[in-house]
Length: 422
Image 1 (cartoon, rainbow, N blue to C red):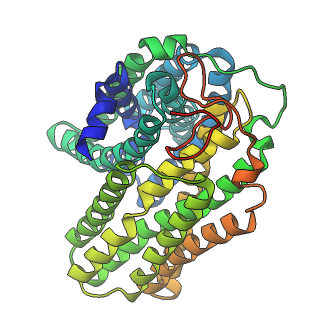
Image 2 (cartoon, rainbow, N blue to C red):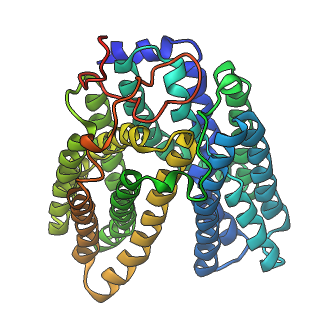
């Protein structure tokens, strides 16, 4: 297993691009907790902290696909780095101005959110030009999904460490400065500088004119909803057991499960169409969420959380392949950015729904929201089988190329026929 991942990291530019992207995404991955901690330190209420964090999240959801489209049109360096600088300046304004003027505070976080560079989608657009074998591309997507789990675990810890050593304002400034350096590392690399999107048909819908992509986005909205609801349900469960540390254990177990699942998924070659496999994985993901409604003892609950997380990273990794195959030509970065946006909006909705579920029902009800989200995602995939299927994807040249973007339908997993022998 490890040998396959090491082969990817030894490929020229691969380690730099993966590391730079993760570092560049730190501001986005830690923004919510950093905003909440800063607002509370400035004397703001939890309601205000939540509202500012929500404003940032919604602004990011709007900005990602727009900037993704700009990357497809103008290239990565001309969009990614200026956006990273503008986003950092917005957050710096928030840190310096504080809560003295609420309109200014909201404006600052909105600017920071809208300008968040689409590094995540950009990396996935670069993988085919960096890796020369299709099995490596498949494994890189799995490694990408696993790296996200690590980033979302380490990032909040880094913020809390900076707050303890300096202050919440310093944490905002340092995290965003680090993010700019990460984006700079990416855009100065040869693959980023030379990458060009394939010619695209002018259409105001851009990537959203693909029925298959719309189906995938619908499913991942509900997966995001499930994950978002678990964050609230976990807090309620910890309160029921009278220990705040319980929440940390649950989230760590969920992340550990995703880490194990992602590594295992990327370690083998998969035959057949990824669309069919995605339905199976999402079905198992939904099945893993349902037992959480039992809310058993803490050790058992931690084990169930780990089991629930096992199929998350594989679902994300498989979705990357499906996005590649269904995104209209010339829209790959925008398509990946829409996936990020839809997942994030779903998580925000799940967070909003799980709170009332706890208050009106119980902790079990809030975990039931996660189970319902997983089931709904599976229903969407099953109901859209005609548009999100292998038969709806014309056979084209493979995506592993030395030049431009991963052409539509080019990204394939090992064992899936492309009309060319390996």
